[in-house]
Length: 282
Image (tube, rainbow, N blue to C red; front, side):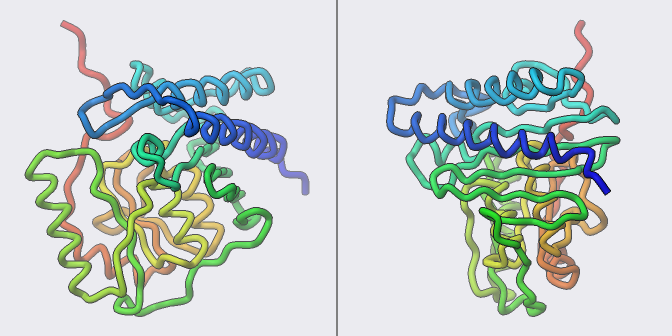
């Protein structure tokens, strides 16, 4: 049976590779950094140029498709997922890494139809690793099939998480409390690549058993969610139950047992949803 979205996925892989070349070139040059919401929430001209490249390229080939892009939302566009074919784009996932020359930087392109994720492409630019996942058709890295770890013991597991960009002391306290409880289970170790998409790809590749975070956005996780699921992993909310793409909360685990065990240790909180209605103008 023909795959109706294979052409779109092929295009996503091609444009992600072009975008990755742009990112690598920018690392060699001066990067203009602007603040978004705070001194730790960074955006560069490269983020904006890469998003424009992707949107322009896709629009030329698929003029009726819609977009949710990190920089477009930052500029004031609504973050609403409809039934229309929608590209969910993070042009530079790991912007802080990018600014500091830290190697984990990714272009992330997810694709949803009828509000269901159909495929995901995550290109780790500096490593030249192309992670792909297509619903019902498996997950791959540079053409090699991915499979999550078969570990079922949390005490034998590697856990990934991030500190996020929110420096509110109450939020930071919850983040550290969760990390302390997870670390003292005990687990083998805790890591963070500085990119939600790549943390999730590491789960899919079997090098990390579970990743959790609160405060990420739909464009951080949409593409990698498909890759995790197709590699045999599970996705859930930080309080259990299914992952809600717009909730800004995610647990990506190799199996249900590990995911549910981590959930017990997380001090959950709820950031404003990505699809929250903007405040009414006075």
